[in-house]
Figure 1 (tube, rainbow, N blue to C red):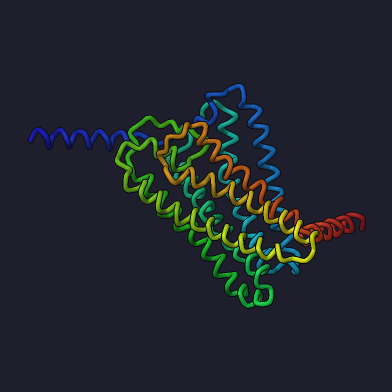
Figure 2 (figure 1 turned 180 degrees about the vertical axis):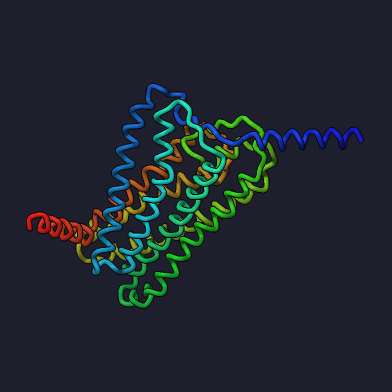
Length: 326
């Protein structure tokens, strides 16, 4: 009888503590107050360049009918994901950097984590689909129109977005179903799964198993498929008769692989072990690599180095100049 009463009172205390957590405090880089202003300025510039770069690609591909082919429509979807990814994370991050401590509501934290997982998961599958598209175009050019027709393209895009939605819909409610018994300080720049999970006062073993297996299927499997695709592409490049063509193709592939490795590598280190022993500052750096740098680099690597995109941009610019002079 005594044991039952004690267990009941403990459970009641947990429920009271959980209900008392109505907001979280994002600490950001509060350990380095002397760097806050410099980091704010750097991140603001990165955010603006990311928004402008991805927005330009979305507009150019929308307006130019010649670019309405799978390769460029994949790029357009990637830019939508990257722009949305940045919009979900960066404004809150800039607020955190401009103050010592920033509060975010329970619902706000839930929403931010949901959309981070949605856009992050979508990008994982979308990059895989893009690698398959390039593999088909370079290694099987004669069959490419049949391999990557409109129907297949639409299926790959829809699969990528639906997969991202499913990842977010499963993982976010699960994390926030755990009791939060205090403290409510998140030692991070935004509401990401690993730092939020550290505040949970319950056994998260099953969730960590899910996180490990989910990361393998969502991050590592697409990454391995991308590596295999680019390996086949490299073999095809080596057979090219033109030295200039080989050099250009190698340069493009190296750029793509750098961006892909940065994104998948840091994301897998973050999510394979949500309660890993990395220091908070190391976790922040890894998160910034795939949430800050990847959306910034993708427009430069995938699109602005592309001659078709540059021609379409110049055409749009000349049209704008003509309209202003008339």
